[in-house]
Image (cartoon, rainbow, N blue to C red; front, side, top):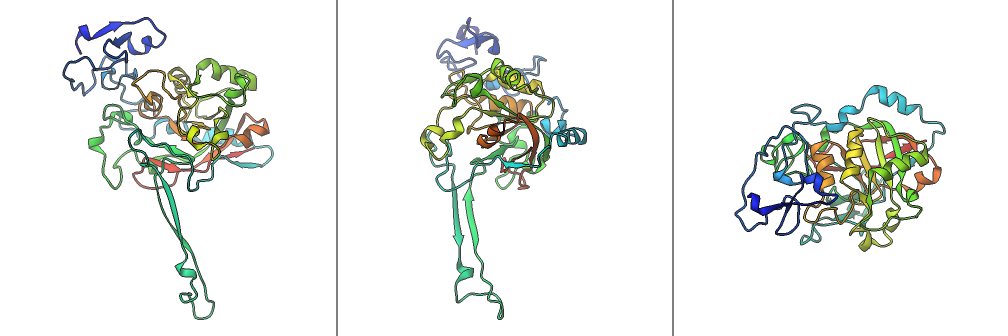
Length: 355
């Protein structure tokens, strides 16, 4: 992009993009300048190793801080010592499930123009229960089984590192051409992800604002995170699983149309606040965790890019937070394990909070 296609701007978001904004559409880093698009891959290496939200225009953001070739990301922070410390948080022996019940008609977002691309459909086959088809001459055993067709990115699920890319590159700079296969990813599959038996922290962001539910487009900032920690007398630490309560989960199966669209969530700065503390997973009672619409027009899901792709921090979406919130507990033993489907980009999960 030529110098004539950009201009310096003075706004709160400009520093994130080096002060560069396209005159043509006011989208930072846009190449919509009337000139022919230029393939900038591989990214220019300025030595910063920090993703700035501008896709291929960004300085090189890999290798991972966990080392070249790593596939675990923030999972490297999980350790036997942290597990032993987290177990000490158990005082009642009470177990709470944090997953939503997945059923036909559950909320699911699809990319614009691809409505219906994400679905869940279950068919329970009862042929083994028919009177004419028992098993066993003596005990007449009947049975039923289900056939399921679905995307894993629905309901309460864990995003893996094969889910989101930046200009064709995924976690640790891996190019999709080097690991993609239709049946299963050759690298970054969800089967590589470690299980969590660690410390969990619930931050009530709605309470910071004095409301039951944050509204669409509400940007959660580092100030909100720090204020929640202060109000709840809790600290976010290395290796933690951090779950955010926005109140938006109250819309689940009540107003799916609203739930599926714009939402409150963390912004760019809050995402960095969390990754700077080396948390292992960020969850929320929303479908995307990050604020929608995004802070910068034309740059959707940059928080996903920063957390999943740049820093290797997992995302846990559609978490049921209400019951845990009602206990008044801010920290707890967090248990979660993804299903071992080889080469998948995500996994259905039922996270547990043990009090």
